[in-house]
Length: 108
Length: 386
Image (cartoon, rainbow over all chains, first blue to last red; front, side):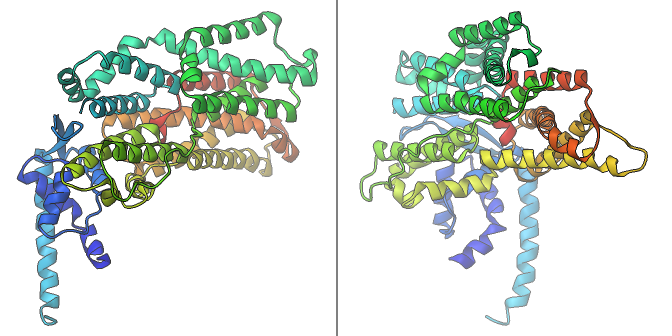
């Protein structure tokens, strides 16, 4: 799990922004969607500071919607600059992953 | 649903008011008034308001807060602190050494009394005993200590410097909250009560540690939404946050770069003390310099402190808007000048042992008063520490 956390550190922003790019979503929903896709090591407290960071940089816009389960939910939606940013992150990630793949393929 | 939504609205509005520089008494008054107003609304109206808390908090503040009111509040608090300082000094040194006339004494006393009667200070004293204790007792205790350990010179600069120092001490708003609700979350049950128990625990812990109030409230608002969503998904608060919500909260605070009040104060005071001392003593070792102007030392000390705080602030802080960033810069500048003035004057006896010094009284007084007025009127509150 610790190893997973280390690997996740550099990719969490990209994963969160990618989820937001799929459709506007809220904090808890993001955790659920990450878990569904196998990223169970994401700490629930860790994503909100990242979301605040995205908002501060203008990568996401927020809106509130009434929820039937409790207080009003805050939804995050990708902005144009957020889309450009996540495209850059994904491109860097693919380059990095390809390079690592070339290095480790013999071990497998 | 309505109760949670009302609490969410109140927390978010309080965070907004704290962030925009309102002092604690004002925030409490605005919150109480809003709570009373919301209690007359039905669920649908409350839900609509919850969608626009930024607008609501702005409008509510404008409706219930005038500049004259804030000024009077600030004057009253400054006057009360200064009156106590002078009173202690008077007892210790006798009236002959104080250059303050009877009419000014009367004016100070009347301003303090009037402000206490009609402004938000009364709200604080009635509503939040612990905050009131810190608000009143901390500067008053410092006033007594400063007046007791130092003779009061007759040039008039000491009382103002001391007032400035005390104002900063109070303005840093280190709420001495009790660690209420520290108990662990029950293992099995979950529901509204458990969620609110967890939230209370986080809030009181955040205030105790001295994280900025606005950030703590923003955080608990997010956590409340999160826990309700988790509950709908069948998860208890304990499953989400672990057995101790405070540890979970620390992770959040660390990721957000929040600074505890004591650390913030230490950093500022250390920076400006070192800066002022270094500048004040260095020229005395150079040939041709026989004296050092305290005023310049003050500015150098302030520059060091401001630079240090800004540098660390920019590296670690998250601002959600450029307005927050600008507010942070202004507060840092004001407080740096103010603190530097006070510390340089307080350290005067030390500097006198090293070499001859001169003080330009008019400048010292003007700078200190200006900084004190700005700081008092806007408050050294959350934007400064985020």
